[in-house]
Image (cartoon, rainbow, N blue to C red; front, side, top):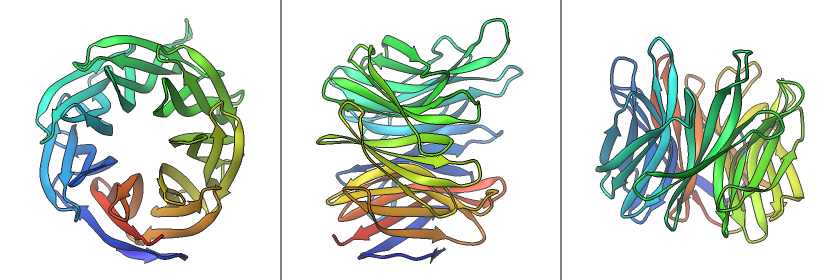
Length: 369
């Protein structure tokens, strides 16, 4: 692998690793812990089925342990710390004559040993879990669900919010649809409330707005707001700050797509908005630094061809400080998640080796502030 493109600043890539296992695999969420990292994703288990995959690494990226959790065809999207262990959320699919999908949650101990697992249909044949937060008496989860639209036979896209207790038993659930239809990517806890981030469709099915919705602890809507730069706008990841939220997404006119950073106050009012142009760029995740933010994703051309990791560092007002484009001309590399590490950051993602073979990608960045 090689570093390509320009960069500015006092940062460097400490090391990169790929997990070249026999089975195709990838990581979608990375969590920093006291003695290393935990990564959630997927690994193939044969017969074209994937399993939830939880991987523990030390600070140098060496494998400590690896666990898989099998239901049917499963992908883990998010992991967070839970009581004396971890909790993973994702999607479990069936490839039978009538394809369907359910939300899947697995609770583990500190060494990844399974304590319980559950699936939830959200009263639909298709639902997926996207993000999870630990709260005092359990967990709140968000995801996407499809419902039949009357007699048309078509499905409409909704967002769900569910509260479960510490054993996985459902306490309540709510569904939302934005202006017309909606999808969700992330949830954060704000004091006693929750904030959901996603996108909502507008009049033209090919157009969307970034969508932010605040609900109380029972799921009742407090406010719901939309934001846009170009014709299609997508929210992917957000941070809670002292005076509001910083949101990472991307905005597109159909041919070009840019990284997008948006700052709003606690009531969702826009404070500033910045876009970062390269060619065709899709953001995945954001984290904060001592003096700003780092956003990651991938960049390619239009129509999309070769994909490479793109990393952008900004100050606290979204002004770009430096960027890195990392990868090779022979493979596709995508950054999916980022977390803080020792005086730097860990990025997890996927490198596509060949048409039907992918591996977990790790990039460890050092930054001297």
